[in-house]
Length: 182
Image (cartoon, rainbow, N blue to C red; front, side, top):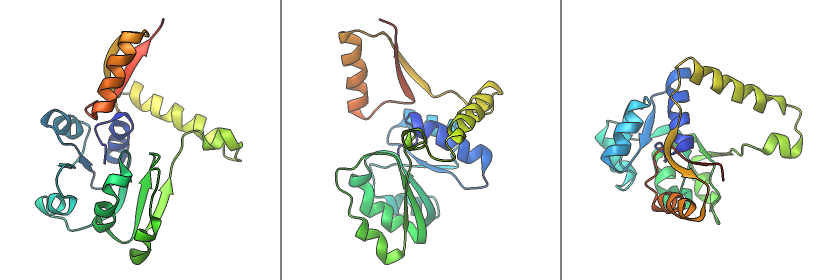
């Protein structure tokens, strides 16, 4: 869920380029559906419709892995339903409440990712963050991955911040929203 956003745009490409997974993204507008397909998704589901129906539309009943990048609280019941028993649910957003007991019946595992965990806690593998970012930069430089640059709002000022934030709040951003300089 969230394949057209900044993280989803990179994740879709990484999953397609570096794994043998069937990559399924979500989008709810023609523009973002096209973007997600362009990034390599085999299928694109409309997350404004029931997920189970959308999976059936593409010939699937359930999946083994789900990455929920936004609005996990809103979609949790559907995500649990979509996952096969012993499936894996990964997320990056910050739900205020998340009833993880819903995962128990299917023995689903929950995996949270936070970009700064390694550096905040000085984990033994902290250098891996550096290595991962360098690898992504190499893949972008080689043309294997596309940049997730979405829309440039110009210099950082009150008006441009309002416009950029408005786009983010609308849930209609595609890729990363960029402001720079003062």
